[in-house]
Image (cartoon, rainbow, N blue to C red; front, top):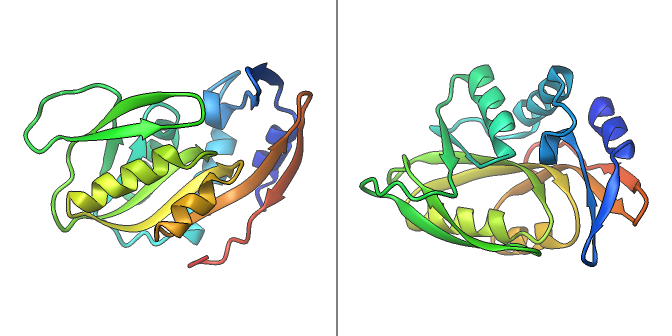
Length: 192
């Protein structure tokens, strides 16, 4: 079903960053180019598997933006972008993000108590970003109705699910120093 995504992942170049085998892909890096057919396939799949009865779509900059924007255009649901920059607006929520290779602050604006949201993002590996953002949304009084990530790598997805968030992923990958050697489509049943 996700043939364009799976093929593009199998063809993705890999390089080492410390002990981490990092794959370069249009969904996770915007490189070498983001093809419309790939985004259409991803967004169409999100619409099929996700609870879209929400008030807002939430995504994290930078690579969640193409997915979130295309989903917003397809559904007419407003998009909230979690930013790496502080704006100081009333109600701004500061989020501490810890991933496998970085630690930083994120900032959420445009969320109100009672908002029903879906969070979408490009990849979950350590689970640090998804968990921190979902917890911040919950503290703000939003209801995280669904969470969809395109690519799952490592055990971070389990951390997010164990915290009680309804994480769905499209594909699971495994990467060695030379290539993405395993791409498994995850069950696309709603409510998984």
